[in-house]
Amino acid sequence: MADRAHPVTEQRHADLRSPLPADERDLPVDVPWLRRRAKLFSSVSKRDFHLVTDLAAYASVSGMPYLAHYAAQVYTGPKTAPLKVPLMAINLQLVTTREEADRALAHETMHLVVPSYGHKAAAFARAQLLLDEVGQLTAVPA
Ligand SMILES: [Zn+2]
Image (cartoon, rainbow, N blue to C red):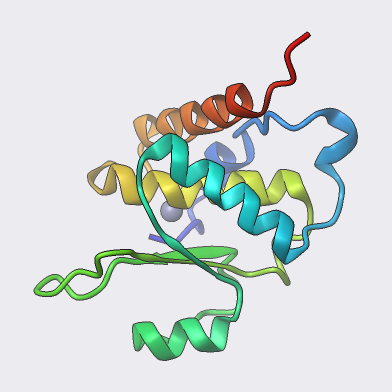
């Protein structure tokens, strides 16, 4: 789920457009902001998840080592006993701007909503839709 090594996947991820205003995209990410933002993605996708930024805790719960080069990852539990509320880990060492955080949240939420899409173009179209919906949710009426 978190493998973005393929150049096509990298490019599709990089092409995701954050709805944040230009002057906010490069702002640093702090955990309270990330939590509020994650709630918006949860709301538009109608999919609950726990946001985890403590990667050691994530590794301990999921039973899988968190690889340092992964920007983000989701864990839905074992197939025989899926978690009611999946975990979404965001690596704040790699996700340093709000624009990058938006891309990571959209990408991982997409995996929760349409796991069978993998990293196909349709997967990223869905991720973009989630970003657009978050943008509509946060749009300030003129
Ligand atoms: Zn992915």
